[in-house]
Amino acid sequence: MLVELAVRNLGVIPEARIPLAEGLVALTGETGAGKTMIVEALDLLAGGRTDPGRVRPGTDEAVVEALLELDGEEFVVRRVVPSSGRSRAYVNGELSTAAALGELMGRAVEVHGQHGQQALLSSRHQRAALDRFAGIDTAPLKAARDRVAELSDRLEHLTGDGPSLAREADYLRYQVEEIEQLAPEADEEERLEAEEDLLAGAVGHRDAGATALAYLADDGAALEQLARAVGALRDREPFREVADRLQAVDVELSDAVAELRSLSDSIEPDDERLAAVRARRQALVQLRRKYGEHLSEVLAFLDTARIRLEELSSVDASADAVRTQLAAARSDLERVAAEVGAARRAAAPQLGAAVGEHLASLALPDARVEVTVVDGELAGAGDHVEFLLAANPGAPLAGLAKVASGGELSRVMLALRLVLSGGPGTMVFDEVDAGIGGATANAVGAALAGLATDRQVVVVTHLAQVAAFADQQVQVAKHTDGATTATTVTALDEDARVVELSRMLSGSPDSTAAREHALELLAGSRGPARRTKVR
Image (tube, rainbow, N blue to C red; front, side, top):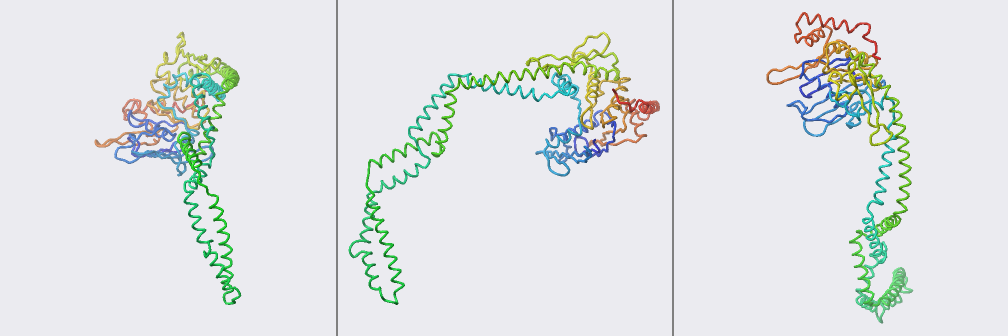
């Protein structure tokens, strides 16, 4: 349930803290005082869209907080709406997303705003009400629809544009042949670059090798001089270590000279090979410009193109396979649709009877309600649901939009809510009693009180007959000093309730007759039937 609600700088409310009782809570006040702002505050906590224009002028942000009691646990939820920028959500002091906040609130509170009556006029909402009443799980139906749509799109892609697919296949075939003809290897460019460097400088390389060999190995060159140095020091004990080191250098140098001679002899100028290497490198560059920054990407493109070409080459076989799957999916959809449609048709009379029974207790004793179920675009599913109402004896059944007045539509919505009374522990109704009065208002008040026997019900009302049934009455009052306007929210004690009910009845809280009538309303609302749940 909703234990407490706090609002700061939202619309005309500078600051309000509202402890909320169990049972039926009535929010009352003059038109324009800001009662709907309380419902809007709850909608914000439920993850609703924020409007910076609702932030009280002259302030930086609006803040809405609530203390919830859910499944034996307490939660403090908070939504901050700045005058500019993104809103923020908190659960128990920790940052949260608006969606997560809304999910938590949705488990605890269900808000029925003034637009809810109009929503009831749509076939979609009426179908949802029937599904909820009958406990119909429509997820398998949606999954079956999606599967048929997916396979239909796939088949259309395979067969719907033959010339386009043929052009795609021709182009892919050209691309595959172009890459395969050149047959690149992933590391080929690095090897060709090294070979080109070798061939382009072949003459210079050989000359450099010959010069180095002359310095090292010709008569009187480094090798011969080093051997003479080693011979001069041999058997001379003071130079033994130096002689050993020079001997090692002599061996290493001899090996280097042999390798240098071999490399020099292996380098042969080859202009034809050089031209071929350069042409190959240029061809690879052109290939990369078309198919990838690196040759590895070109090869990856080749693999993908081959797979796609194979798919296009076997379109007929693929299309036949998809047709088979689509036929099975359509058969499954027909089966699921028939099951859902049968469940809807079976439950429709029960829902109509249940709503009609509640309307009888809401001062429409002769009302008849029928719920029709017909197929729409999907055969068998019964996805076009309509509530038909005959409010008076002898009147023909017709759609709610054609025959229901504002008050009658309010009562149909309340009756439906009484039928579908499972759900969160707190229900909030914003002026569900619009357009009614007199004995009907008494009946609506009693129905709301009955609904509140096993849950908390918060109702925004202008009717004293409804407010009199409340376990707690909260007054929303607007005050102005000529320069600014502010709204206060006050939980009323018994004496203050009499004054407020007098105002609601006559517009004059000081009227003796109105006060007597208010006391009479309070006494009547607390009779033996006060806590009998409407059935």
